[in-house]
Length: 178
Image (cartoon, rainbow, N blue to C red; front, side):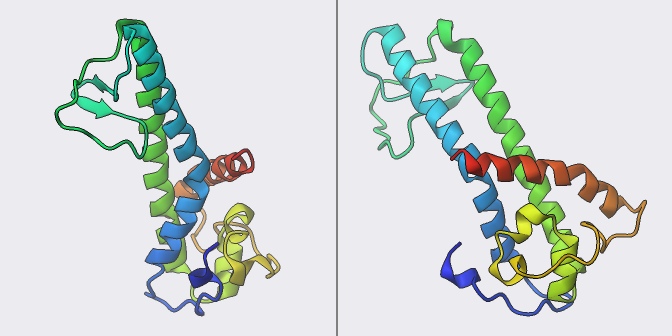
């Protein structure tokens, strides 16, 4: 974790944790983002092989895909993905859409959770272990209540938290393979 998040301030009602939330979400999704980048690179390589010549990237449903950090030459030929690779592109786009949706949902739930906390201990209790491990000021605190405890049982926020908590674990585990 970067130095700027080593000592987070004591939470205050209405305090802003925007940067911290963005950092936690970025950390959780690093492995998935790398997997998606590799998928695009592989598709570009397979597309070049299918056409029998090097290509910068490919077009799919109006969007241009190229490997990360590839300078985009506006004069370069832009061809559609080879028909033999269409199913793979559909799979990639579906995966990327799911990851983007999950990222948005997780960010929303973390914002609501952080906003409901008024102390570091409350924050520690409210967040799942996989998230508290990413925040140095929280990782050494003992849990004294269940995750999501800042939301009343049966509330919409609690239902959203309970729905998203397993996804947090999935993305945290994905980091181990990165």
